[in-house]
Length: 273
Image (cartoon, rainbow, N blue to C red; front, side, top):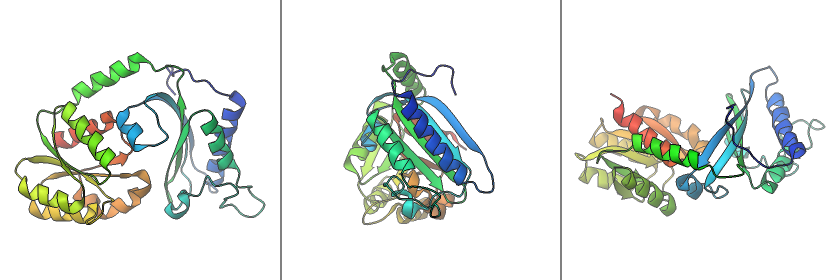
């Protein structure tokens, strides 16, 4: 953890219970042994991230992450893990109340939990705890980072069917030195790319879209220009689905993302040879 962690306000006993519940789950997920990690770090949630995550609010947080290298949680049951009495453990081995209790405690503190899991690789629970005050130093540092990551008039094609996400992404790019071209579905993205193939420097492609999904759109755009740089955008829960297009993309941007993460990913892709 960082020695400059922000201060949070909470019930020590309850938060200890949350961390212990997550640690017990991590232990049980590694019957043959493995690595259990607990980390704490500062995190600033900007407007981008808040718009993509309904429970998040703009401000400074301390993130406590508990991760394991265990069996992982299948995508089809990941959305159910916080339901009361839901458990994957053998009869008599668990009440199914650990995670639902943890979520209730976290919400009572004005917080939220993110979960990322890959079957056979492990699971990571991240608890976002609001800092007592929004630190202007963090915001200033954030703005300085964004300046370093700004574009120089490059054209970015943004393919995203969610209006709010598309709008905030386009706005962020335009505020930070890029020119943005917006598409609301995959077919629209392919058509716009075909019309502007000599100008578009990078394509930001959401993987879950109507009419033509990200996978089909990426393949179609690659047929027009195999050298174009493409960033696949998706919720972490859908990362497994990206394996089919891994060879066709230059990077992966998980939702929700901050302005810094967006700009950093684009900067790295454009800078790569």
